[in-house]
Amino acid sequence: MNTQKLLSYTRKAVDEYRLIQDNDKIAVGISGGKDSLALLVALANLRRFYPHPFTLEAVTVDLGNPGFETEKIRTFCQELGVNYTCIQTDIAKIIFEERKEKNPCSLCAKMRKGALNDAALELGCNKIAYAHHKDDLIETLMMSLLFEGRINTFSPLTHLDRTGLYLIRPLIFVNEEDIRGYALGSHLPVTKSHCPADGFTKREYTKELLARIYEENPGARDRMFGAILNNDFKGWPRRIDRYEALRQS
Image (cartoon, rainbow, N blue to C red; front, side, top):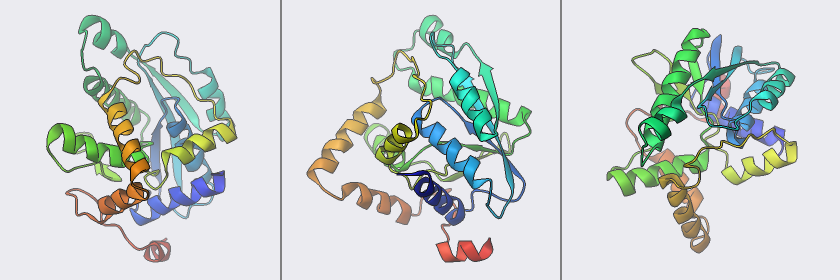
């Protein structure tokens, strides 16, 4: 996948779910991983020609894991013309040293999101962009079914009543494997997370389970993705036809 293809998928999501409006100021959550860096590239390029003008802020929530570095991320943001902010926290210390959480991911995600929300508000942003892609969407549905007994997944557009912020997910039409190839081919400055729980989570288990399903059932990924988009999940915005979206632009 090249940058043009990445932009095409991104604009498809932005148009069909009306993720960006005039004068939005969007905080892009940058973990240093391939997904968030690809999202930043896509939005930074889309910003140049999208009919609804918007601005970007790149924000990293540093969990405090030893060895995590942000200099390459900062330089990359400068090259893209995007202001960069790194928020220092003690989240890792609280979770792994003080609380000694056996299942740390849920609490970590909650604290990380809270810190990102606070930073976005301080920067004057009204939206936050997450780098969740097509495979994340399917994995979240499967995890909800397996571990919660619900049929649910995240929405392309979510309003946070308490903060007034909107969450947008412009990469939902992009396969993870395509992002991986793009990151390698474009030499994105991917930064290792150094999280002690990395690779030992329920999401990793679900990812491996789905990989086996896809291998044994060709086309299963696209069928599952189509089923999600065609479902009437509570809280999801109405998906509009691409041509209607272009006319409204």
